Image 1: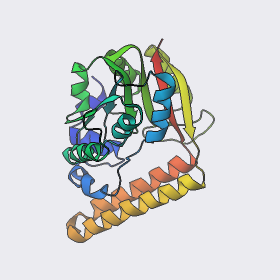
Image 2: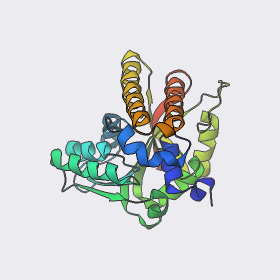
Image 3: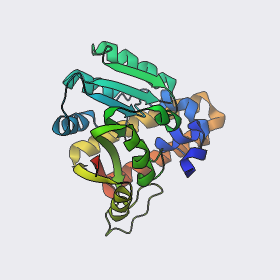
Image 4: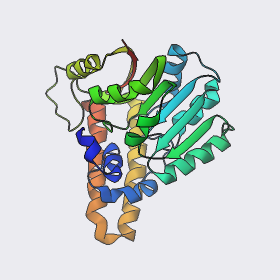
Length: 262
């Protein structure tokens, strides 16, 4: 059993959102109310699915840690596939269902509140599995890919939106590993990277990050006004997010990777 399995669902979700205390869990819907797309880029994922799968109503997509459903809803709208999204935050799942109705794809999208670490054990028959910037919820890459490939149909693919560190950099991160170690773990799991999109930290990206951070900081400051005794909780989260945005823009290679069993 890996270290992630011992974490509570609150700890796991907060860690995926770059927090460091489970007390933050109850406040995440408020803090992230200005976001629909949380982490992963739906358009990049759509492009990869179209490139490596036969798009259409027979395509079965599993969106693990689906957040507010942006990836599933936009995939269903664009290519007409069936999407099953799972997330631990009920408010996010409710919003995903609302968005599916708004985009007229409720008949293609199904969402569920659950712990993906346990739910994954009963899932199978998927052509595409998406992990959109949720971090090491299942453990390291070896553990993650070993678990997820059991849910794949033959010729299925796994898409993971994540970051890694170039081998020639001395930068250290609490979660991200080097590209060399990542490749070792992928091969140990019996998988190959068949495609990759690297996100460049250009001016548009930096401006988007600034807008996102400003929204997040403003919501945390509102919560400080409402819960003054929890000021440290929210200020620590603001600081964590600032460090993470800085690392994303300056130190980490941000990538959408496509995996396939060997």
